[in-house]
Image 1: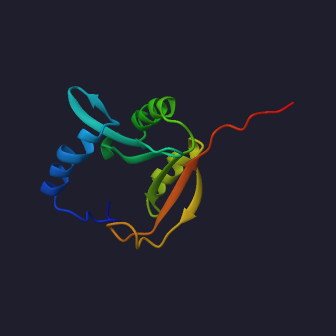
Image 2: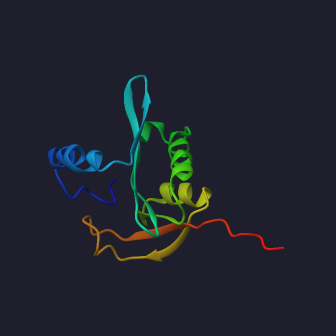
Length: 131
């Protein structure tokens, strides 16, 4: 991501994934011909569910893989569901908005490791129609 360089070297990222992300649970991957091509990680707190990580192989973006992961996640997480993405990641922003997420906060990036402006999205519970 040219707008958000990694805050950690690749070996530190791999170690963190193996020692923290995967053991914490809530990690789903998509495979294509035996190769992992996408990943999504989620967490559930008392009041809010989170998509904490999502990545799709750039060569496969737009082929429905992210949509399938997100659909599976929406069946397993309680709403509201929140996530952050970088403001400059226009493709991700369009993707989440197309799937019903709304931007609820824009930040200057001081609170994230990359120090890049981000946006907090939320997918709320469907409102009950009282008739």
